[in-house]
Image 1: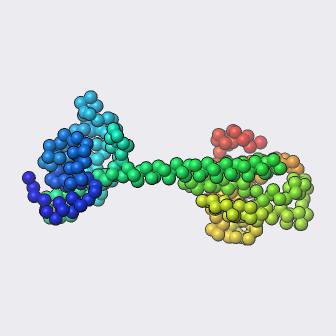
Image 2: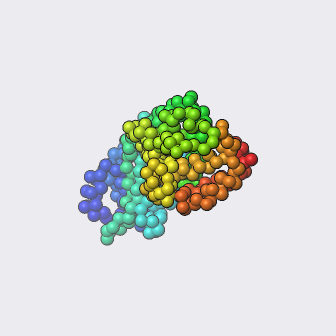
Image 3: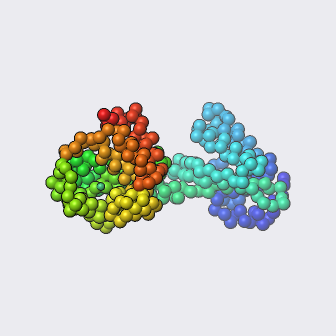
Length: 350
Ligand SMILES: [Fe+2]
């Protein structure tokens, strides 16, 4: 049996993780106190806690044994195979490190471990350190945070739905438009590969992007014909009014900014603040494109919707000038696909 430096043993004995030191062939040269304790507590049948056995070969045997011949499950076999391959990769110098989380449930509790395989930098025969760290508490905290996140997302969603419903009661056209814009904006965001969380926030923001119109008289909102300058000025106020309504709510997404900025344009020609380029948040740049597209193709009480091609032409012409180029590229790939499920559902091509 190879010798292990006493300093290495005292270091690994101080660790709470279960640690084994392996030589270049995968043979267990030494284990720490935590490894021994875990083996005793779990009734391991390995002689000498595995010292002198080839750890990698043991795992490979477990991975390939038929389930009837082993006491494990197919999950155990998959894990054993992955760990053996990870150790071999570090031993061969193909990977600097191997890590893997895995379940190792006991009859009395659900347990999770983090396996870490690292090279051992010493002049001795030891080549790698294999450590199994109990991360059950960490996993439980993660799960709790995830569940709390879901609950929070549900309440945000219900809050937004309630606001959307309030708008719908007063102005069904705006409500329908917001729903369409939310669906379009989310599709564009998905094509742009936004993360699920950002997509969720984008959907919420788009669902109430015109909330400020709640304070605008319906006669002005849906009046046919050209608006007078003062009437147009009143309509333009809806971004700031919406922002005012929402800014006190602490959303984890920039919902109030999405509402404030959805009529801003890349070249600074938009309103209310004439913001340019990246000063406009990405979600507002996406909502702007979905908003214009839906506004062009939708029927209104005072005018019929225009043809899909007209909407596409307007977006193409504004690409990189007034609309974000990446958003337009994503939008065009989606809007122009008239065979898509969305088009079939909404029958927007006349
Ligand atoms: Fe608007």
